[in-house]
Each structure stands twice: as structure tokens, then as C-alpha cells.
Amino acid sequence: MSQQLPTGRSASDWALFALLTLFWAGAYALTRVAVDKGNPDAGLPVGWVLPGRLTIGAALLWIVMLARGQKLPSFRDKPRWIAIIGMGLAGSVFPFFLITTAQETVNSSLAALYTAAVPIFVVSGATFLFADERMTRGTAVGVLAGFAGVAVLFGPDAMKGLGNASVVAQLLLILATMNYAAASLMARGAPKIEAIPFATGFVTLAAIVSWPLVFTVDPSDVNADWTHWAGVVGLGVIPTAIAQALYMFLIARTSATFLSLTGYAIPVVSAVLGWIFFRETQSWHALIAFALILGGVWLARRGGGVKTG
Image (tube, rainbow, N blue to C red; front, side):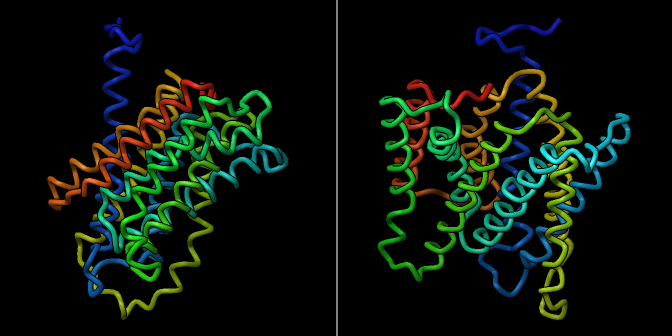
């Protein structure tokens, strides 16, 4: 029998949680390797990184699904396929494209900081979509604090002008955060689907949608070596396939509320990885922004925010 910790979760739950956090945080470091951030003369273009990671991830998820004797929903099951399509676009294609493009300019640890703001956007959207999740006064204060954190994180570079490359990249990261929030809201309202087929369906759809990007790149313009390709393979195997399967396993074993804590842990782990491998550091305003965002999320949840399970 698993040892129960004071939090009510077993040691194995926390071990798997830590592994999932590491896998998702590692996506930012692997993306930096694949695009060779800061080196315009080397690395793989977004048009190859995105289809590559999604196709590899989809292939591995198909193997897992078939090995478990499961299958995708019938094509006549429109509600479930609408959910799969929505998750494929908002949960994979759009945010992966936006984050990968942004990381050609910004550090992996900065990109990961925006992950912490996803619950703030989720709370804001849920108040308009779900009758049982109307915003309370406490929730509103938390949302305002969270958005203040995003403004602090974004602000200093914005002062340099909207043409600044870092500003454009951070705008893309904000859009990616909004897409992740939209995906969470879609999952909240989606009909029940078995975890692995759901993940296999939306990652496969995302891969297919991304394939045309391959033909937007002239191969003669690409200067990449095995390290860049290894980054793409790592992205497909670890955060796209293994992490999705692990997430679905954990959400069935624990709860979505428990796993939402990854939003707090991913920026911290990503910052550690960024420092170890790339000597990335963050400015004081990024630390203040992170504190504001986390404080806002805490207030929003305590004030009656989104019920995630």
C-alpha cells in the first residue's frame, strides 16, 4: 500500500507529479535546442519543429492506444469530435506554434513563466461560460492581481517599443497562454472520453493540421545538425507523448485540481533547467511578476474560481 503523505496524496502520486512537471518544463529547454535560440544562422525552423514533434507524439500515442485495445470515438459522434478538434487546435497546434516561434527570441525560462497565468485566463473565461462558476469579489481581486503580474512581466520590454523582438515574442506567449486556457475550458465542457483515445485523437489531428507547414520551408535554407533534430525527437517523445499519457493516467488517479499545481511548478523547474544548461537568469521584475501571478491564482481559487476536479 502506498504511503500517504499529510497532504492526502501518496508518495507515488507526488513522484509522478514531479516527473510530469519535469517533462513539461523540459519542453521549453528542448524547444530552445531545436530552434537554436539567438542563432539566426542555425537551428530548425518552426515549420519543421512543430510537425515533427506532433507527428512523433501522435505515433507513440497510437502505439499506446492500440496496445491497450482502445480506439477513437466513431466519426458519427459529433460532440466528441468537436472536443477533439478544439483540443487539437487550441491545446496543441496554436500554442506550440506560438511558443516555438517566440523561443527563437526569448529564453526558455521566460517563456515558461507565462504558463503560471493560464488559470487566470481560465477563471475569466469560465465566469461567462458556466453558470456554476460566476466570478465572486475574491475571484475578481485574484484575476486583477494575476493580470497585473502579466503586465509587470511584459511591461519593461514594451517600453522599448512594439517593434522590439522580445515584445513581439511575449505577445505570442500571451496568445499561447490564452489558447491553453481555451483548451482547459473546452476540456471542462467536453463529453466524457477515454483519456488515451482523447489524447491520441487531438494530437493526431494537430499533427495533420501542421503538416502543410513543412512545405513553407526551403530545405536549402536550413542549417541544422543532429542536436537540433534530437531536440525535435525529444519534444515528440517526452512532453508530447509520454507526458500526455502520464497526465491522463494521473488525472484519473488523482484530480485535475491536484495536477493544476504544475502551473506553479513548471516555471520554477524551467528556470532551474535554463540556468543549468544555458545559464539563463531572470530580472527582478520577472520575479515580482511571478509572485503576483501566483498570488492572483491563489486568491482566485480561494474566492470561488474554477472547479477543476
